[in-house]
Image (cartoon, rainbow, N blue to C red; front, side):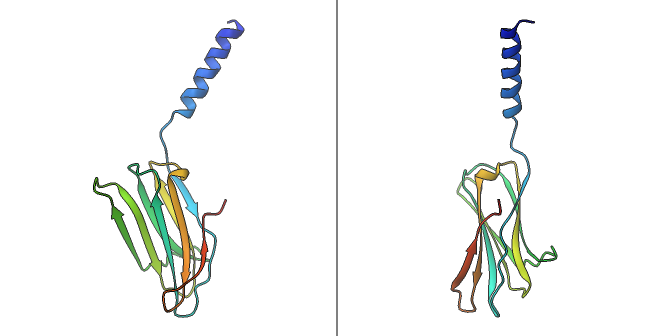
Length: 128
């Protein structure tokens, strides 16, 4: 095998390896502490408008799910556009988002802390 054939084989292998389908990924936000009588809300947005599955949870510092409810929004074509979760648990701490059939760059996520009147106190995004 000459060097030109070897180079073409290596390039073809790299292209094929990068051409795979999007798979599952998990995104975790930074931590916030809810104010007394306040709550945490997490919003995940489908930035690419690709078909994908999103599972959103608000968890406490020990990793226990403390989500009170989840709301989903779909566009006119039925594609999942946004997922929203909320928790009024005193120990709510962060948001965990599982993304299926999409890349991390296809999803935006933000966790917000609200006071008892609905005013945003703090906001954080995904950990890097």
